[in-house]
Image 1 (spheres, rainbow, N blue to C red):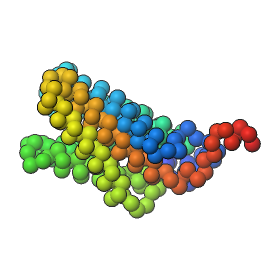
Image 2: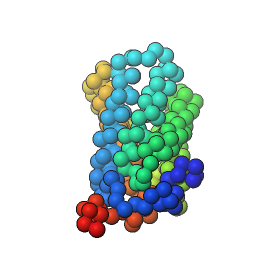
Image 3: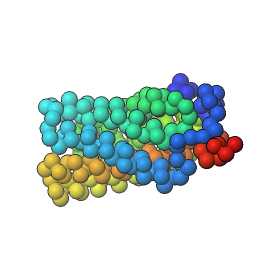
Image 4: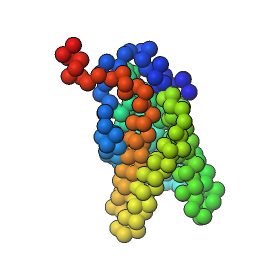
Amino acid sequence: MRIFGLTPDSVLARAPLVHSRAPASLAYAMIYGALSFGAVSVLAYSIWAYRLIPGTGAMYASIAAIYIGLTGLALSRLVLGAGATGRFALLFAAAFAVYALAWCAFWFGLKGKHHADLWGAAVGLLGMALMLSRAFGKRGDVLALFAVLFTCHSLGYYLGDVLYATVRGAAGRLLWGAAHGLGFGAGLGYVLFQIQAALRSHVRPASRVAES
């Protein structure tokens, strides 16, 4: 998937990675991913929390649009290379669309029964992990990346479900969005850090660049 220009050779052809704003720590990537995606998630869930869009289909479409439109920009801080923001935003929009379509297909197809949300998330997240890996030129380990992403996503989603069942109302819905976003974002931070391992060898800290 070289079309997005995020593979190591494409990134280095645009500019050598002498220094980078992207984090050198996996912990930082996961925390930043959790907080940034969590903020977007609360905004998306507010549509449901306050019944801003009438109609089930329109509501889900609006929620997906917020995720698609904002998450790529929010997470681009974790992406190495010059000119990565717009490229990653387009990639993530496509990857999240795959996730959203899979989730909706299972949810509406199974009418919310038989763990429809779990199956939808599993299929959608596998597609997302595969797209992100291929776009960044990462070969292999897709199942391992999916396992972490699915685990983090599920922990956040089902914690949110528990919070909503406890609090209810608009506050409960927003708490669900926050928990879902924190878990999902942590998983995405992990994935983005791991699939850029080949590029990090080309990064020099800004302090060393200034000294040279």
